[in-house]
Length: 165
Image 1 (cartoon, rainbow, N blue to C red):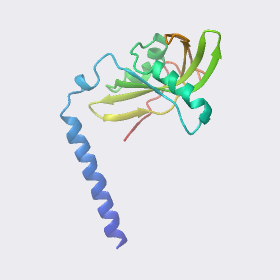
Image 2 (image 1 turned 60 degrees about the horizontal axis):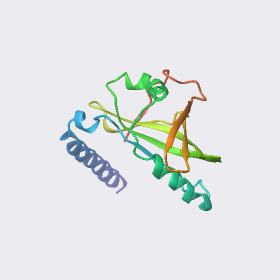
Image 3 (image 1 turned 45 degrees about the vertical axis):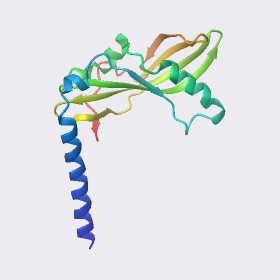
Image 4 (image 1 turned 30 degrees about the vertical axis):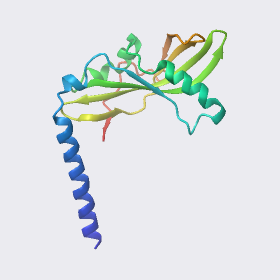
């Protein structure tokens, strides 16, 4: 009985994987990974206290969707992006902190790259790296890039470490 259940589970997983590949094989990578790539920004509702979540959501709404990629981010991820045929198909940022100041808020984001390639397909994600970016979100709803932070000193040195789903 156990062998039959394991065999059935393996068959289901393989079938889903094949269907995923068939669906995504119909879209050329040049269209999926076109430029510019939007930045998705969010926060972890399990970590941010409930009374601060409206502020974090507001900051995410302001920062969500912009397409500018600063030189520091390109340099940080260059070792992976320039190897193995990978193309960035999405950027994401998780708000780590929001620090109020006289002009609005300084928002710190943990930034990750979503990668694709003809070899691995669309569902490849970078393992967390610790790379951070800071943005000044002003009281009038505008924002400016402030700086990038590379606390581990990994810029341009990242090992190949994607995880395929």
